[in-house]
Length: 84
Image 1 (cartoon, rainbow, N blue to C red):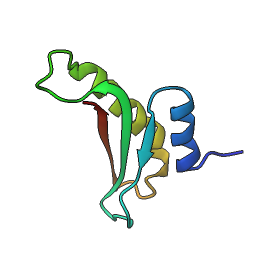
Image 2 (cartoon, rainbow, N blue to C red; image 1 turned 90 degrees about the vertical axis):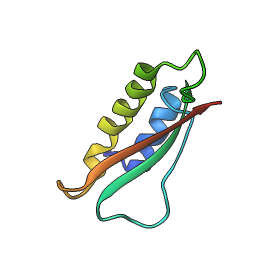
Image 3 (cartoon, rainbow, N blue to C red; image 1 turned 180 degrees about the vertical axis):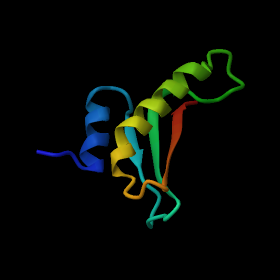
Image 4 (tube, rainbow, N blue to C red; image 1 turned 180 degrees about the horizontal axis):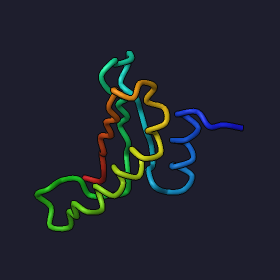
């Protein structure tokens, strides 16, 4: 059985990589955009912010959803929301 975009994101939730996800309404011809929530600190003003951890989540999700972008010229955009 091949995965869909939604089942791929649900798998990442089960694996603990992210805790939730959403996709902005309406398709974009320029980018596949996914907004994920992850157990990370994304506020750069907090002393416990770790850019590498946030980027690791972003790269992992982007790599997993890349096959669903459709057009090779279409970008993959992953926005990460985290703990306050």
